[in-house]
Amino acid sequence: MDAVNLLGFDLPGLAAYCEQLGEKKFRATQLFRWIHQKGASDFEQMSDLAKSLREKLKGNAHIAALPVISEHVSTDGTIKWLFDVGNGDAVEAVFIPEDDRGTLCISSQAGCAVGCRFCSTGHQGFSRNLGAAEITAQLWFAEHNLRKRLNTTERVISNVVMMGMGEPLQNYDQLVPALKTMLDDHGYGLSRRRVTVSTSGVVPMIDRLREDCPVALAVSLHAPTDPLRDQLVPLNKKYPIAELLDACNRYLDKAPRDFITFEYCMLQEVNDSPEQAHELVRLLKNKVNCKINLIPFNPFPASGLTRSTNARVQAFAEVLIQAAIVTTVRKTRGDDIDAACGQLAGEVQDRTRAHIRMVRAPVTVAKSS
Ligand code: SAH
Ligand code: SF4
Image (cartoon, rainbow, N blue to C red; front, side, top):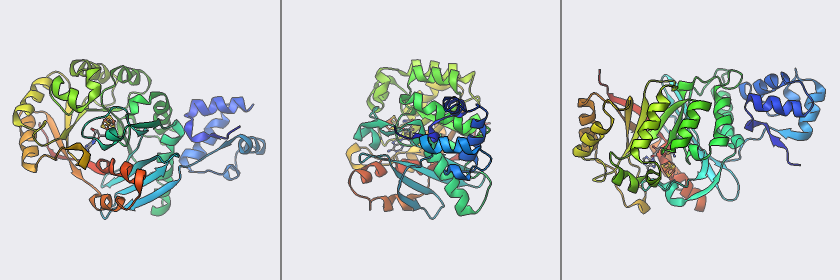
């Protein structure tokens, strides 16, 4: 029998597992703290656990990180890890340090089935869902690796965003235990407002997340009308904008913040005209409490699309701000390490390029009062 990777369990899951081994449930809390708070991977280290339990765990379970294929450190402090998830697939996690926080961007799938036109992951298609252990392993590794290099026992990662590779809400069952581990006081102890799920709009799963684990929500909107969104985000044909906005409003009464973040990738002469900004205002103003995050497009050859000029981004933002919609433009982080990724070979290079967009952090350019 394959060893069970304990990184995949949230605390109730680990308690159930301990019971299965014939152990008291409360042992799980000690074990969970060893794993997530102390970063232990060797059961022998866990000195306050009974020897008999340690022996059972050694025979049945392990705490397994993902093999690191590469690490790139930017001059601005951004760190990007590429992890091997087997069969030629690789996923990325990116750490973005800022003055008042440290954000980790995590992947949920190898590839993605949604197929957005402007997304290189979407162009590559879907390979497979990550398991809960593989999702949590990205945080477990990054947090404890960073603590070691910074020579601290304090928490380094204060925020997690599910904005890496894949559509998290199309991998719901594996996502939720990972989120719960992030939130658990015996795990990473992150508040719900510091964990963000970004989705292209899987409406029924937005409703389920609202019930099961209502963390902060970011929705990838990218267009003010259905005909355009149908083209950019094919999932829109299944869940059109009106249904998506209704789901956002339902989510808001459980959400940790009183707004939804809408992401809008700025594509030159596709979705970035002042008229489209006005359409966006008409769509959202007094309809959904929101903030808009404009993301300058990261071009890749197969897309046939180009990044909006700064002037167009500013003009678009101005229309939204005039309408008193809080609007931010993402600034580029870690640009220098994107280039370095080109040194990787084949499949891995493709997947890395797909995630250049992750090395971006939000910066506020203007706020309405
Ligand atoms: N699948 C989820 C989360 C991962 S994508 C989602 O779509 O929301 C994270 C964000 O990066 C999304 O807003 C996505 O639209 C955006 N994005 C994808 N490709 C991009 C690119 N080439 N340039 C800029 N942003 C991109
Ligand atoms: Fe998938 Fe998100 Fe990329 Fe769309 S933008 S293809 S949903 S990862």
